[in-house]
Figure 1 (cartoon, rainbow, N blue to C red):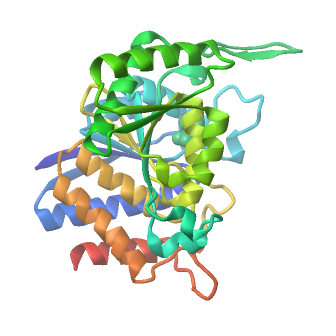
Figure 2 (figure 1 turned 120 degrees about the horizontal axis):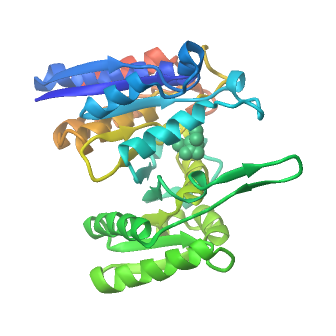
Figure 3 (figure 1 turned 90 degrees about the vertical axis):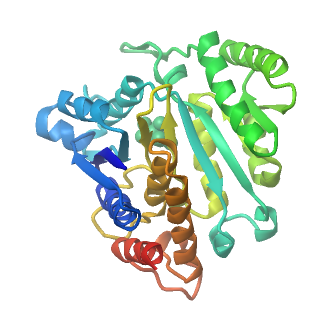
Length: 354
Ligand code: IPM
Ligand code: MG
């Protein structure tokens, strides 16, 4: 098949891990005889430096013309002054809004060889396999913001439509897995959460009576994620809770560098990004973990290009590289020596070709 993929390396380790995603996609194209064209564009801090805009028109046009968009990461200390007028993250939020990718899918997959790198005991991690569906284009991220000399506010808004559509995405996914869905809110305090719960209960009762629904308050969910992670299958939650809970969930896998994501809307163009950020503390050292980025490229093959076999091949290549002992610094255990980002990429590409 022919496909056009926009690459947005962004900032910090974003550029280092995007190289991995690209090399893996190139290897897939070669092996399965597809033709993927890549269009690399500026975004985030790199775009602010080049033209003062974290999401230039040209980047938007490229994304809109593409079959899929891959993003590395944005942000960094250079652009994070609290008084700055333009910020790299604004570009990311605008891109999510422009592409209408309201459903952010974040699978939490445990590699048994890596349980030693998680701060949790290995027996707690046995059989953990969950997917968090994070609402991505609403809530407090997108509400009106105010700031004056003595106060600031962020408005959190959700509409019935926004909740219905994300619950449907999550419930359909639950149906294809173990038919269990956990909805996370803060209905004991927030009005948006009370609406979330009401709409979720109704949609589930009317349209998905076969799915078992559990509802948790976000503070309790944060605790249960650590105490009984294997009880979760599909979790659906609002934008900010999903942001926080998925960084927490990444610790089940041992490293933030292992979690990929796919952001989907009603049109085909999806946005794929590792959930980690630009990691300024390790940027430029060639030691970042490319697994999350490469797994995101796998999700791109599956969700935007419909190439399931190729997506599975990428996932198997990551697992195999890990089984054979390939480890970047964030996932080494005592006695193992870490390899560089490029070596990890090469190990995964080798498995794919092998
Ligand atoms: C994420 C990130 C972003 C978010 C930041 C970089 C704006 O943390 O994708 O989880 O909060 O959505
Ligand atoms: Mg986050």
